[in-house]
Length: 187
Image (cartoon, rainbow, N blue to C red; front, side, top):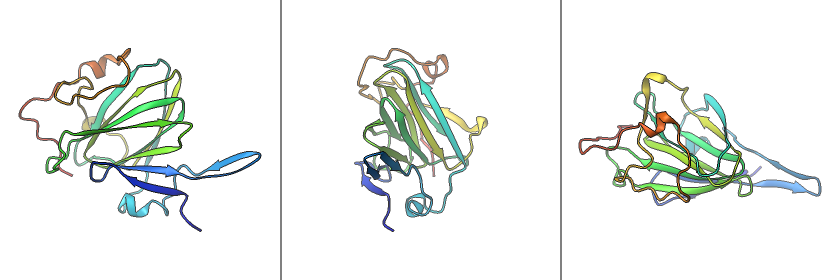
């Protein structure tokens, strides 16, 4: 059987879009959200160890830019199951030629895309509709002692959010701006 996924490169090495293929008929469709066997090469020996689901109610809300510090770095596969989001990944790999560059994708219930975000990236999103539901597949369980983040409105990142930022958690607002000595992470 052929894969239920098309893997598409982005301008940043390692960051991918997984286009999910639908099998449908007059009743509707079946969609595979994840398959360890089909995505084994992309996952490079890692397995999914945690799946999270979020609901964000208000349009314009920004969540992020979150990451886990070594040795707890994680790969994420991010999907939007309801609504539409502007999903952003920032390269924070210390040895990367695209260090601190970001790439964004529209994820929606309608476009059936998964954003494959490897270790060494900060991640966040902005809701473009009300009541957005997101599904995250993680290769490492969350570790509160390894939690870190960049400020989503940091001028050094210059992320071009699609809409004015209407809401952020108080925690996300307080994430530090990047200082000149920021080294990123080694993966």
